[in-house]
Image (cartoon, rainbow, N blue to C red; front, side):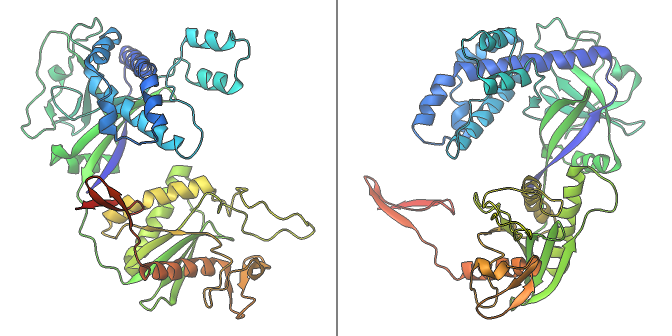
Length: 466
C-alpha cells in the first residue's frame, strides 16, 4: 500500500472565506509556535541524550495544560493536528541535529520578536533573516482525519458531479462561525460509507464549504477513492500566490510485486541528464538509454515526474530491478576532467550542474521512484554507493583516476577496457549490486542484563536472546 497526494485548488473563494482562512492560518502558526517555545527546554534535554524518540513519544510530551492553553488561540478543532505537526517538526529537528548543526524550529514571528532581535547589542544576521521570513507567515493547516463531523471531508454535487471540501475551522464559541447556504441550492452528498445529503440548518456552523477546481486526472483519482472513503487520510490547506490549495493524502493498494529478471542501472549522465543501462540475466549489458530534456515545456516538478515515469516504464518493459546512483556526502564531485589550459584540480566536494540536472534535482527524482515502482508492481529501487563509480573498470575492477583522462570516455590503464562513461557508470552499479548479494550480513552482539542483544542498524534488525 502506498500513499498518494492529490492537490486541488479551492475554486474562487469569496473575500470573506479567504479572510477567515488566513485568520485561521495565522492563529494556527501562533499556537504551534507557542508549543515549540513552551517545550524548547524539554526538547533540548532529549537532544542531549542523543536518543531519537518516535513521533508518538514526542506527542506524549504535550500535557493537558498545554492543550487547554490552546483555547486562547481558538484552536479547538486543530488540537490533534497541532500535536502531530509539533511531533513531526521536533522529530525532523532531532534527526537533522545528529548529522549537522541546525537551529530550533521557528514557524511564526511577530512585532515583539522582530524588536527583540534588532534591539540586541549584536543582532545576528542569520536570525534576523529567518525571523523576517517567518514574520506573520500563514501556516499550512493540517487536518488529521477524514470525518463528516470533524476535521475535513468531501461532498459531491449529484447534479454536476463536482467536488466540494467541508473543513472545520472554528470552535463552537467562535464569533466567526458562518451560516452555510450551499445545501439549499445544490444537491451535495457526503463522500462517505453511509452517504447522506448535507443537512440544511439556519444556525451558524463551525465549518466552511469550498468548491474544488479539479483536473481530469485529479477528478479520476477522487472518483476511485470515493468508492472506498476509508482510504482518505490527512489533508492540508496552504496558500501560494494568493490562491488556496487542498492537498489530500489517499492510501492506495499496489499490485503484487513481480519477480524481476534483469537489472536497470540509473546514473547521472555526462552529455545527457540521465542514463539507463539494462543488463541481461548474466549481468551483461543489453540496452542503454539516454534521457534528454522533455520536448514539451514544463516546470521543474513536471520535468522530474516525466523522467521518473520514463524510468519506471523502461524497468517495467524489461522486467528490471532499479538500481540508482546513491550520492554520499563527499561523492557529489566534479566528475569531468579539468578543462584544457587549467592546472587547478577540481574540488572533490564542489557541486555543479551536470547536463542540466542538479544534485538536489537528482535526489528529488530518486525520491519519486519508490512509490512509482510500487504502483507498477516493481520491487523497491535500491541505492548503490557511488564512490569512484566512474573511475572503476567494469571488466577487471581496477580503480584509478588515470582511467578518466578523457572526457566522456573511460580507458582502463590496467586491462585496456574502454567504454562510454555513461555505460561504465551503469555497469558498475550492476556489478556492485551483484557483489553486495554475495556478501555476508554482519550482526553485532553485546551483553545486556536481560540477555544478548543482536542487531544490524543498517537493516533495522534488533532482537534479544537469553
